[in-house]
Length: 124
Image (cartoon, rainbow, N blue to C red):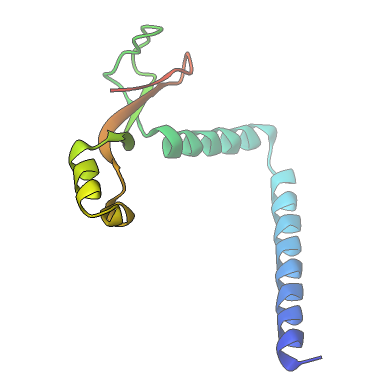
């Protein structure tokens, strides 16, 4: 066996042992928590995930579907638009070479909102 292959095998083995040890220690720390602490940790994890996916809560916004105030999250995002006429014209004039660099469709910045009560998502 070559020294490079042996080194790679040792590195992979160490990574596996480290991951296993981390999982065992995390499991032990979770078991030592009270049910209330576990619930608090779970709620904080769900809140962080919702903030990453849908953005922060907007207290002043009202959901147009369920009329609930303060349960709407919003964030800016980009969305693809249709084919740009100017880009299509340039693509025809250059024989399609410009499409490699720019593509035909454009994108626009929109605001995505999500209601945590009725689980509806809309864009404006």
